[in-house]
Length: 65
Image 1 (spheres, helix red, strand yellow):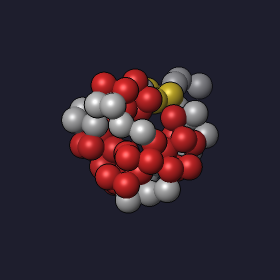
Image 2 (cartoon, one colour):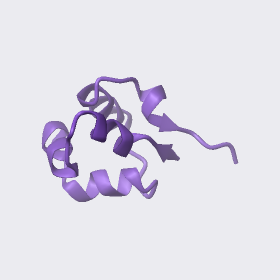
Image 3 (cartoon, helix red, strand yellow):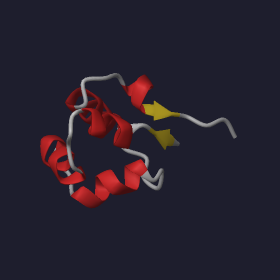
Image 4 (cartoon, helix red, strand yellow):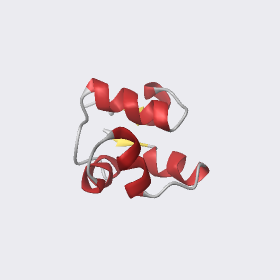
C-alpha cells in the first residue's frame, strides 16, 4: 500500500514525531507507514487522516495485485 503521509505532513510542517504524538504512536510507526512497510489498523488510518485534515482515501492508495 502506498501513502501520501509525507506529502500531507509537509503541507502542515509536521515532523514524523509531531504526527506520531498527535495519533498516539511511535515515530517509527509513521516512518514504516510512509515507506509502505506497515499497514495501519482502520482506527489508526482514520486518526492519521483526521490529524492531516484529509480522508483515508486521499491518504492511502491500495495497489492492485
